[in-house]
Length: 264
Image 1 (spheres, one colour):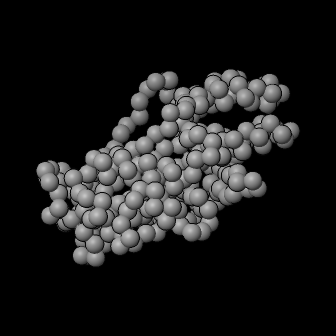
Image 2 (spheres, one colour; image 1 turned 180 degrees about the horizontal axis):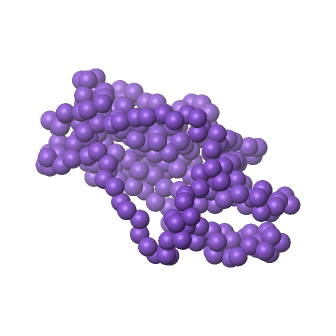
């Protein structure tokens, strides 16, 4: 799909203050590490993640999304009344129904005429939502939309820690849980609009390309568990990067790529 009239008018993030370092997580897992004779520092070495942010206990995904929504609207030159479609596009959600977008919509104070819904597609949800709103703008259905994604990783990390400490797992049996310990929290918001509404430089959304490789859908699967917790298993062996990636020196940066945006 290609767009001629769609712009990302504003972009903002909301981040929690609390940080859990990889070293702190490993310290909580000390009984497991000592029993399996695992080297401390392994989590940061293998993932490159020194720390991850977490929202306070009791935070909902809609709270995070609302924080990002308010932040991006504060940066926008458009009025809140101009928002015609609102999408919550995170993995995290408040509950199965109603849509988490309904809670975030009320917390942000968006107009009643804005249509709302959730888009859920794992880590791609936010990008999918951008192209959905872009298509609505390009086709003339709406002039302005707001997309947010508020992720709340604390319950998953806490549930994983409980599982790892409660079960007599072997080295091979802990592998599916490794990716869980890299998860953090945060939120992002984007205001998209028709280029005719932009005041100043126009940062165009050029479009998007999609491919589906659903034969890999079993590599990483997550679901809810009792008491509001989360559970996720990742086939780390099948997902592994080449050994040369893991031998990269600590602190070495990876290449960065620009996605399909253009300033005119």
